[in-house]
Length: 130
Image 1: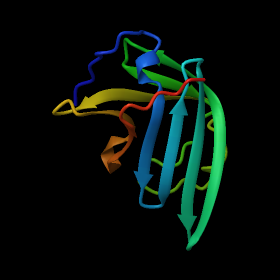
Image 2: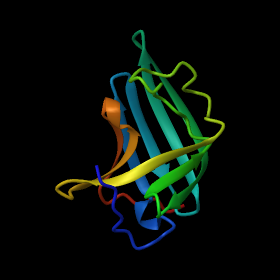
Image 3: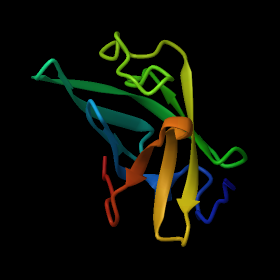
Image 4: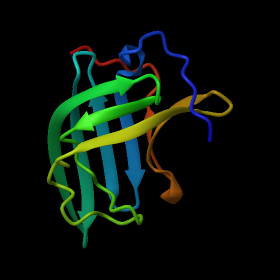
């Protein structure tokens, strides 16, 4: 996998908008705003019961690493492909997620856990205006 940047802004303005992740145990919507804020909406299903959790925090984009750095993001997956027990508690450190283009250049993805096949996919033509 090669991360490359085709974006005009080092601050990640072109990367703002809606990102969606799908897991066997639920879905996640991540809205990234140009003002450095993000909002998360997570819907998980455990033992047949659906739960929705919302969250907000801050982000920065590092053009050198081609990665977002999120503060106070919910980490849904435990690193082994399963739902994290405390998924509803924001991560206390900085979470870094690499951004890359999915060949043949048709979509933009952001890593969650590539080993398990979990990624955020940028919703085409979505721009958040906060």
